[in-house]
Image (cartoon, rainbow, N blue to C red; front, side, top):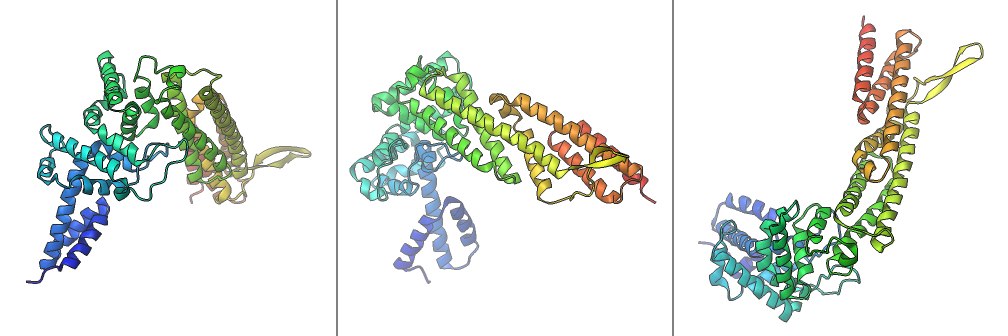
Length: 450
């Protein structure tokens, strides 16, 4: 019976250990379908690795999000992903008898939590005693960046027993907790401070990693003490770093929006809508949860962001009006004698960059409805919508009048442009006007049929 040699087994084990989780699952399915003894041995290797990762996920569950960057790009405490398997490999040495307790135990209480906490304590010891064995080319983070160091990760592992009990209550703290639930949060922070002077901030970092909407974490931060909702108190505590991270992210997004303004593609405009909406959500949440002084550092940063975004939105709206006029232009037409009037130019291109640029800008204006309220631009946005609705409706109706009166040389081209006007009306959510234009266009199209 042929089998894998020790060298082959070691090489395959190293390859399997290097596979990402998603690839490991696919590899397991592919290997199971292969014939032969060597494939069977490889299947055993893959199965053992999958079981080992499941145990690691159970034991280190509170800290797992700390090993990947946040999807929203907000500065946060993040550790190198390669540290996770290295720490686990060292922490489980000598603890093999406890590992079976972790199998399938993530949803029930029992002795598995003791085994998990024991393994986390071992991981903390490894990081403190032998950091060079698990940390890749350690370099101290720059000033102002989250402290991603072996000592910081060890401190987080010290808090995993508390974090394991806190995470089920996180959803309550993010909403509207009652007095008893708020007291539980404050007791948790006190327990963390008893573990280490930075324990409170580390616990908030751990909880923050489990929250997708960064601004909602302000609701937890401002409830960690009786005076935490006041800037003068929060800014002088370890918890103030979370507000500073959010404001730094707002500033970065504001600069990104300014850079995207010159690109009138649909993707760029959608990014602008997303970024401005995110900034609006953060600033609105700060207004609700924090008592910020206008003359303070935080107050000035927030006010400057509002001013910059407001100016960019105003420029965006002006660009939208210009783009619509360029996509569906008018030209001066002689009525009688020297009498002229502006009428739709029905020889304009019915496709191309001007059309798509105008569509992207109109989509952005519609998508900014909620954010415009936060930045004080909703009146301008509503006025622009009214102006564009009137312009597009008038443009389309005059074009259809020309088609009906037989004054148009190319009716098909004119009807295509009328369809674009109806599309633009739909994009700015002027649905009734869009339906009226489409009904008239359908009637004109029917009238032209033989």
